[in-house]
Image (cartoon, rainbow, N blue to C red; front, side, top):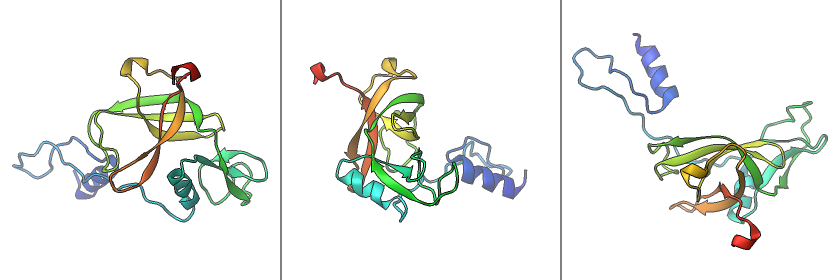
Length: 168
């Protein structure tokens, strides 16, 4: 096993369970430091600013109207006329998994439900689900966004099941 292979596996896989390659080592697994917190950059700064105001935005092509996640140009036809637009923040669970170990300094709850939500506005959004019992989890579950601040003031969009108006 080459050193490069081991380093690459460690870098890509996060917390991997593997045998330490050094002869005589007692280590069974090698832990990678938790990934950094969510980082804001110039292209998605309007998204994070809106989250702090309780508004959920999606990125949209001004030419064709297709929504997608931040990119330099529309993935459909390559036009660069893009804009942030307000989203309903509603969608349906496309897929989900339960993570039983802490995988980020930002997401500290364990277990954590990590999901891909297909927004009613079109794009998929990778997120955490909260306020849902494991037995209620299902593909197609109607969810809505709400915002949660971490200990350092970062406001994150997370999703929870839609609550019927008469249950509020």
